[in-house]
Image (cartoon, rainbow, N blue to C red; front, side, top):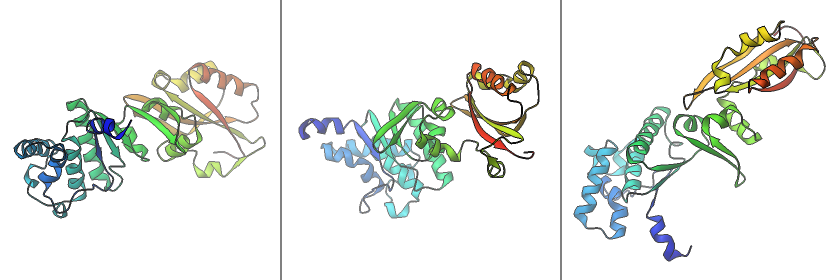
Length: 274
């Protein structure tokens, strides 16, 4: 689009920034009303809209204050109110919580979620913090070197990341094989084979391990893992140790798990009990 065609489109897009980008010489209400001033709206209309939005973000009492008197979380709330001034159809949030402490981050995310629900406003959230995605997003797209490498419902992508960059990003919040076990992993046959099992949805709701023990009798041990919930969907990662000399039984274990829509990976073998 050319510049003339872009202008009305831009008015339908609000944006909140990582470092707030407030005008220090203007009051909070004037910062919020700025997009309407640029549009040429009357001052009375601008201030009425600013009052409405400051109440929405819980900062009515700060209308006459200047940004220097605000905390980081308050500044971001002002930035959010400003982004909503022109009643956008889409809100872009560019790393809006990365400069905030954890408690303030939670409050801003709760506010975004509330605004998304109350105003029916689509929010495009750019972040590298997977906890933020898990707590607020409906869908996620993972971008690597400018290309979308995978996308889908958050619970689905978290349960079965396909790309290496996604697995790396999720490394901090998905269960990982403990270092004490990983350090003893060997390429050859050891005493026990370590399996990683990723399950989600219905596969994670049922008695998977007890059904496995019944269907494929014999020893195995849960050495690490657990079940989390993302978007009200159970998402789990389990690490099992299976006797390494049981070559006939291992394929049956894997086949049973895969029939239950679990993703199974043989990580390797360890010598000595884990």
